[in-house]
Amino acid sequence: MKTKSFQKDKINIVTLGCSKNTVDSEVLLTQLRGNGLQAVHETAKDDANIVIVNTCGFIDRAKQESIDTILRYADAKNEGRIDKLYVTGCLSQRYKDNLEAEIPEVDAFFGTMELPLLLKKFNADYKHELIGERVTTTARHFAYLKISEGCDRPCSFCAIPLMRGKHVSKPTEQIIAEATNLVRNGTKELILIAQDLTYYGLDLGHGRQLADLLRRLSDVPGLAWLRLQYAYPAGFPLEVLDVMAERANICKYLDMPLQHGSTKMLKLMRRGITRPKTEELLATIRAKVPGIALRTTLIAGHPGETEADFAEMLDFVERTRFDRLGVFTYSHEENTHSHSMADDVPEEVKQERAALIMETQEGISLALNQAKVGQTLPVLFDRKEGGYFVGRTQYDSPEVDNEVLVDAKQHFVRLGDLAPVRITGAAEFDLFGEPVSAS
Image 1 (cartoon, rainbow, N blue to C red):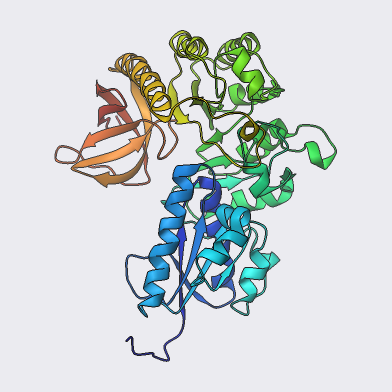
Image 2 (cartoon, rainbow, N blue to C red):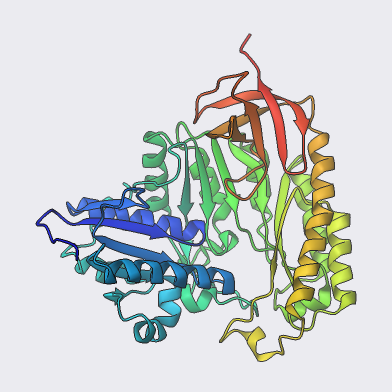
């Protein structure tokens, strides 16, 4: 049995899921420390006696990872290696009653909007003066900046509104204050995130305000890159493209999950757009922002998807030639509109279709990468790994996109630096290069 000590409590926050969860954990970490508590994020040391797991509940695979993580720490509590275990985030929001019954080792479960209640467990208060002082858990030179919470979109397959609620835009001045503080503390790249960036401002009563927000953020002194991650295609505010084209520090990059390439399937998914309208929008984006990198994600195996529908999606990928692409297999989520339909595509067929999409994208990505050989591109270096300095161009977001590898035996670069690199080689999802010395 563990010998109890009278040492000060140490809280370890464990984050699962998307970048929006990362920001939530960073806010929690900031608030705990601001209340004088000892708190860390995913510490490698086994010295925290309290654990908070920030869960994901997006699709089956993410839910299982969250449950497995909770159970691992529940075992640690039973063995006396930790004293308290709390769970928050999307899975907790969605399945709180079930989780309380099935995992009684957890001391308390909290939803996505219950940060003040979680803080009260530590006799801590939510400090509004810390809003612009967020502690980051990413590499110091980039940070995610959440501009809104929740979603009003009616997508048939998506459980996000069940876990995150309706769309609520963060006040512009609060966003600017947070961005200014992050850049002052060394952040070079800000990555704008939300369930839907393009909806920003509608609930504030002045129409879509993403373009105005981009101008304000672009003016933050010292900001090198501003990146847009997640834009909804239906009703896309085209004025955003004008700002992207005119501002040098806004990355020529747009993440726009399109989900399918068949009009029939887009209707079943309740996306509010057709394939022809999607193709028209993509052509406009590429015309207004020459050289832009387009990233999308697709879903394979949604209810009702026939071989002909999938063939349309594959044709869409081949014709559009996205710079970056990911694909999910459909997950049958309770209380969504799609859950009322029969989950009629076998799992093995979903996997086969997803694999074929990625095989097609692999060839497209290789060709696009090979076209960059000989070019000199600014690269932001994130880390050193496996004998290489690893960085990204403005066309790549962290963790999900391509990377640039520089041989650490032959060259030296400082992590966090934005440096020119001549591209010397290309693979399917990586570029290889050499730093270019200043003349």
